[in-house]
Image (cartoon, rainbow, N blue to C red; front, side, top):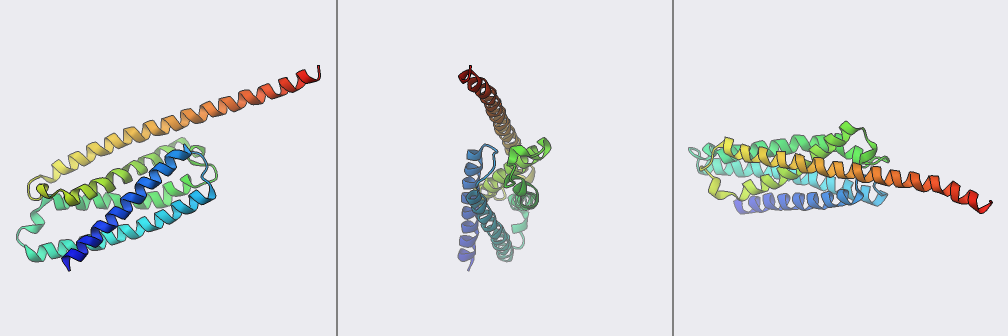
Length: 205
């Protein structure tokens, strides 16, 4: 029974992380522009699957905690890595709600990400960074057996916080690059538009 629950737990995590990485790559290719209808459908489908995976992750995870407690009621809950993982998954869940109701509608809007207000762009980038780091770190905690009963809660959360800071910096640089690229494209389009009337008038001189 426990083996099946562990398998379901790992399967949910693998599916979610796989879809997460695919989504990140797909969004990076758009460079903050408007998504095609097919891309919106794919992202919507992926978001639904990730929601199911998150629910399964919670159910299977709580079941494993219950089984672990029943096997070793004196020591199991003293594992501080367990509480760190619970914290990370809780952050992941709250952030997932923010992604669903705030970030996702802005990403798939007809204006695209860069068509949104600057504050919204930053918040979308930050929620995306939190999602990526939290999913990957939660999976790592699931296999970090040497940390069981060996590391403090504060130590694990310090590493998690450091990874979040790094992810925020990367997300900020990616967003800055998107804005710079959009500015360059806009400037180029304006120059071409300015040259067209001039070239057309010369033909009639």
